[in-house]
Image 1 (cartoon, each protein chain N blue to C red):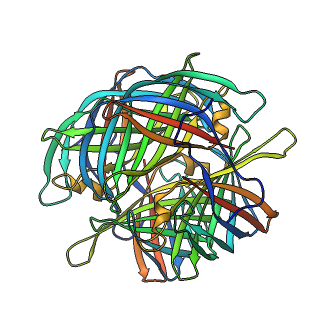
Image 2: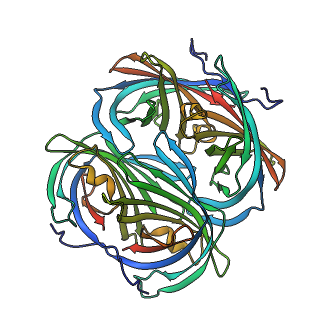
Image 3: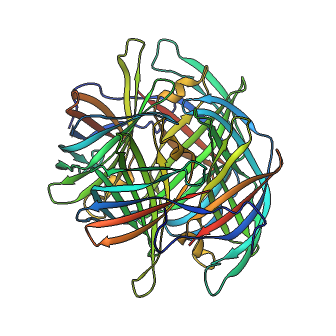
Length: 155
Length: 155
Length: 155
Length: 155
């Protein structure tokens, strides 16, 4: 199958090294097993508006105090809802909602780790982030310590 | 900027011709101007698991009775939350939540029409849809009558 | 246990007779069994700002085209997310999101049928609805045909 | 207006003293001004199933690492979405989502501070919390330092 035109593309936008601490296992609830991964800090760097004639680099830190709310569904898929903030090096705070799914095969190997990312930024130099959808990847860099999130803008 | 590996890709998954009726203008509310576009029917066709060695075609109809809840934000972006159901030709009902943004330039021309799509399908031949994220495009085929939604799976 | 002051109270606000059609059984999905109840019409009447010195009656119809998305959780509780619109007799459209839970005892008798209701109204005479939380009851008046929703404002 | 029977009532369920730190002002975004209040700890105590023949006391601490995401809407109402966890003294973690509205009069005095509270608890002694809706009050005990949340179960 192929669609004639206006095919959307994904362009790299930012990469975050997100520091985490020990997972808290809340246990089985009405919609699945609930775990919480506290987010304790990190850094990010990337480029705004990579599709435009005027891409602009941006970078900064991940603020401590967010978390990743995880739910193991009954079909075995793990859903993640990470809510946290990134602060740019010029002092602007950006809210991140990263809704991910981790699918594993019979051996427990992850075969799919993607996410939908929504961003809420204040008016000003980062407002472009409010006007795009993002698609993310999730990679465990150091299990239990650091996760790498890559975000691609869908253009 | 480029990321080394595991770059996500978008593959065409399904295309829906969604029939709509006249927009109801609810008016300005606390989070923006609210409009509702009733969804009255339509058709779809596509392919499940296009990334796999065993892609399977699927098709069917859009059930009447859904809607697209639209909100014009104060930054001029129109957010759309379309909720409706598709029924496959073997009788399975699939729930669609299509969260779109339409961004326009100063002349009113749309410069960005993309969406995040989440699907909820019952167990069985369509359960693959529960395990992937989708990225959509929105195209007005016949203004006020039909919208074309193309959905790409992020793999 | 009792709390000293500022005890919240519930005051009757509106009652809706919501007409429904046959439940569509989507089947078991990743978060529970999914059913959909189409909403086909109805009427409502009530009073705005019942806590104030100036309560004002309001009434109108339930617009066809909404639905109640139901999910049977693995703990046996049925969660309902009803999304529909009510139109006042002076032509204003009000969006309703009614999130209910139905809990049953061992014999299948419902022991709890309550809901959280959020309202989105346009600016003007009904804007008060945007500024309050509501607590609802759900009663099956004619099984498969009509549901009575009573909404109480929390003041 | 009055409704004949099955009038819902609110019963005191728990009270939390939630410690907060300095508000971070993110600034005006596409849906309103965004502020974040970090949640740094606290305590709670209350009673489970107060409507039953067998109410049971429960208590514990508020875990650090949550936050209250605030949005000032264009109609002047402040919406709050607090997400945090409480841990009981027997080691069970309970997730809280407290969606509040603060309405002020012309002089800036709050005239309405109520919330919808959803709870997600694991199976076991606290599972009752998954089966009820709660209505909350929000009171600033020590501005910028401590908020008192009272939660009432709707029965």
